[in-house]
Image (cartoon, rainbow, N blue to C red; front, top):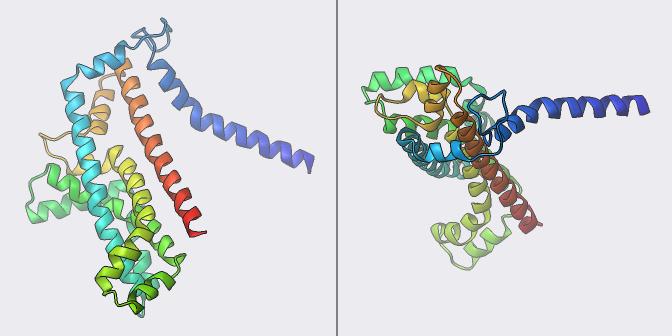
Length: 261
């Protein structure tokens, strides 16, 4: 038993090191004063300052934030509506319909990108922010749908039934009882979908236009011509944004679980 525990601990340490060590190295070397990554030339913030003077990077950051916010907001509306509809509907294949909403999580992103490319070409839609928002909304929906569906499954219907018994209309009961109860799940899913949309590069490459670039696309393009220390600083910022979104999502879920108890 002791030998098994030691092997399990060693395996856990190894996997953790392989996962987080590259991230730590990138963050540390984003503060390296040297242009050569293999040489440490003292602590410096010049690469972060260089980022602030890069108009293309700032434009890409603005596009990524707008795209992630728009996609997560639209996905929240669609996913919440779908979860409520499936929850209350009496469908013979209710379980199968519910699982179909999770397909974007299963399908490889490169396949989704090709599908969206062909679909937008068929509709003759101009490639740009519009096609980016549509594509990102589609693959963000499952992240919010799973959160809201789980919340609805664990939610008591007593409050809703009490509101209806007191004379509240279905719309009034929804806005005064149901929506406040599921809002933590909606927000948690939105934070997750924001993070996923913010750092997506595969689908974005397929559906973006020549005049619209997101931050991940700019990073991917610049990596082809060589790694600049400025990329390390940018990656550190994107990691911070992603971790912040996941932390906020976890905090909202924890708060929601306490409220249910």
